[in-house]
Image 1 (tube, helix red, strand yellow):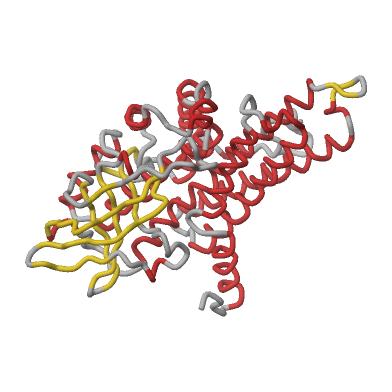
Image 2 (tube, one colour; image 1 turned 180 degrees about the vertical axis):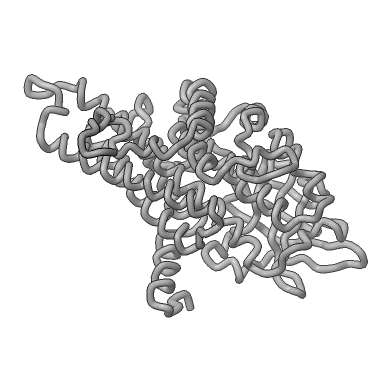
Length: 396
């Protein structure tokens, strides 16, 4: 821009001009996902949340498949082959509707499909990925156990060879999509190390009771996976990886989506606070005209758009093949933590109305309490960064 050029008008919805970094395809994908969420989620999600259910999840999955949102950053096998930035934009728009909807998409694409796409055999890819991309088959990802979350190396789920078969026994916990999945990617200890298995959920000995009585992610299906002598053929194992590198690389891909998604929940809460502040009157004028309220809104806007800019930067690095797991930890740690603070500040602006499901703020805040700790707790990401900064391992 020349010194004499006139800058564009200030855009309160995009104060840093981040949209200037997006091309026409990026904007079109964002508009498609935003429009789908506005039509199919936002009118109903408060009711789903209040009832603690996600009705019609299989239909929603097929619709998400039809717009290319499932496994969208993967290539081939019916997947959209979108860029990392485009996938991130989709995650932001989905979580602006509800974290549970973004979790459905993240687990399907970044965990279950990603594991099969990266580590599966050609036969496994052909069997599962096209149907999963279309939303005809829902997938889940079994790593966390009742007694082992942050330390997956200590998992108890075990797979042993029996002739030409594998026999799996164990339990997995807090598994999104579990009770509606057609295939479960399950990680288990074996004599040669940790291996992944593509488990058809109709296999005898497999069950997935749904977890109830949640105060967070209520518009989401969360289950336990129970494996009692689940017998699988030899070709059920994912052949291209042994050890924790497999599941951890899947988690890094999913955490990247969270970096964007958390900013969607934050944006929704921020927008609700801005609109409320402009219309709610106290002492004879809108509360948005008071200095303390404007200070809150300014601080929220700064953290929101810094977080989006950080997500965009990480997306460009992923697209260039230069994104490191430590950088994903940086993004998840910052963006989820700041998103929760934005929601809490928005709640104070809305006052008592902030706890009502007529507004999205408390729903987002409670959902983010789960997002804060799943796929890596605050402490784990702090230690990942601490090790990267000092070269000293504080995990053990």
